Length: 483
Ligand SMILES: NC(=O)c1ccc[n+]([C@@H]2O[C@H](COP(=O)([O-])OP(=O)(O)OC[C@H]3O[C@@H](n4cnc5c(N)ncnc54)[C@H](OP(=O)(O)O)[C@@H]3O)[C@@H](O)[C@H]2O)c1
Picture (spheres, helix red, strand yellow):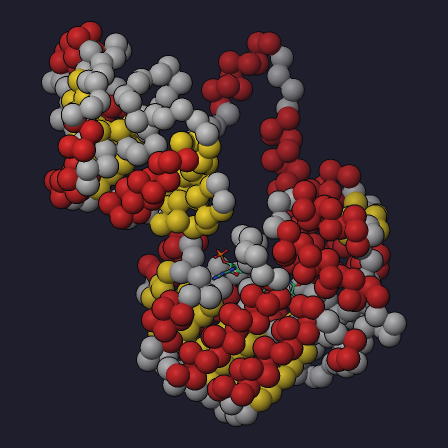
């Protein structure tokens, strides 16, 4: 049995993959972020890297599979030009069609719970229900799980709960809020259970219905702190989401989703069945999940804000931990965009994770990100070492081969630094050093005086020379710098 899992790092997908691997099922996952699912890969799952709307990625994952777990995700990085609901519809239509073409026999589909009065549904509710029909048409054997509002949504309010004792969000009609772990469990069972056939729909709801004010009271009891529901209007909520950096097309869809529930004339009565009603109560969830999350948040806050007296400074500085993060950004000249992309993607094997009008986000290796901002900034191709620059180090498992590729690309300027490694200036102006992945680099950590130190100092005094790419040799001046 080969099962394809979409959104393996999502609230529902993670558990499903974990459980399937425990059952020794062959799992193929589609994910844009290998670092988020590397434990699953180590445990034997296959990773097909890429977006769920890429047909090549889907075909690769679906090949030879019999079962599919499909979530049409809310993509918080989406900044496309089409309405997000249209994107969801197009993506799921393609997914269903390719599932059919690849001979997938069974689908477990995550949708959303909504009231019986379907005529009142619009936007994302309507789209997710249309997607159910599209999969039914294409694959026939489809189990649809329609979760109600996930209790995990309250994890997004830990900061205001902990700091101000409030949950700030719009009022909702009463719904049977459900814990993700209960939905995960149902998805996992449906994936392994071969006894069902045809089109089966379950509204997956919690044991009791609450609006947000009522839920706030239960949460308050569960975590043992007074909490108040600050009722936001749909417009205020839209503003908060935008301020939190959620892209506009997604904000519009989510705001419309809230408005749909809010504007409904009827009570929002979700269908309940014995099979679809789950056991985790909001009180239990608050005690087991929200309370520790609030305590952890407060502990972090406390350690970060303990006031220092003058004499305490040295000790605190010694214990406070700082590491370099894995995200960087740089402003580069607009005209270098093409050569930057060629170099970082074609030569170094990086991937563009998002492109915008004047910005590319690029991932190098598993988890180092560079944001290139293209601006009207001075051309940086002439070698110039400024006091503000940091030279970065890149690592390769085949230094010889990679050095050759880099130099022969004609895109870089080799720097003749008296050190055994390849130093060069990449398109955009950044200086990099190439080293081996398993190389002993303790010399650069101050471990010993390596054989090159004297030479390096000598070279620095004399000024290092640079070697230009062939194309630039004839015109550019040879630069030098003082260390
Ligand atoms: N949240 C709720 O209250 C609720 C209620 C009812 C139903 N649902 C449904 O449950 C599902 C999951 O919702 P959720 O809130 O739980 O989401 P989530 O856990 O936040 O998961 C979103 C996942 O989608 C992945 N993803 C996003 N865009 C992608 C793309 N273009 N290609 C591949 N993967 C992509 C993300 O992975 P990366 O970003 O790492 O790539 C992430 O793993 C949705 O279908 C939603 O409609 C949610």
